[in-house]
Image (tube, rainbow, N blue to C red; front, side, top):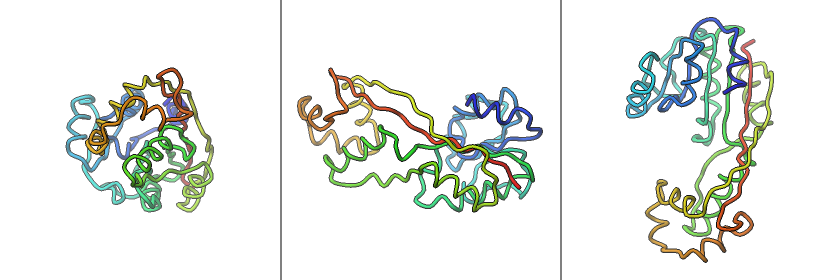
Length: 219
């Protein structure tokens, strides 16, 4: 968010936060900009309105934004692309609503993200099925932006180490969408430690979180 705010600091006019959810990134944006949040989930928009009553909100499809073309000074989109197997339409829509010289910020899980790669591995080993979560590397995001008529300013990977107590990690899995299926397996602590392998040290899960950040501009 620090890099987002620096990149958008001279932007005049509204910033469209696509896939705003409950408004976590928008908390920083709204300090400096008029923000319009878009999400398809009414529950998320209600939470965002509660968290940020001054934000303007729109309910609509992310790949068919309820916004006229070339109307936004800037667009942000955080951790949305990974929910779609083909994010091309979404990036095209982000480009469509941007004014000429309008700025775009994209951030999502990197294909090198230890945490998601670990979850992928566990779901295959324990539940026997793929998570089907799409992730992009730096090159892929740059290509997506350029194909949508956007000039890429920066694409880079951000990372930070994360340590999670084993009990907390397992409880988080149990709260996920497939949590009940994990619970049915009734795995012991020793079984979890064996499955986690190199990721666990002294009853703690050690992973490096990696995200891709892309900054661009409409030609």
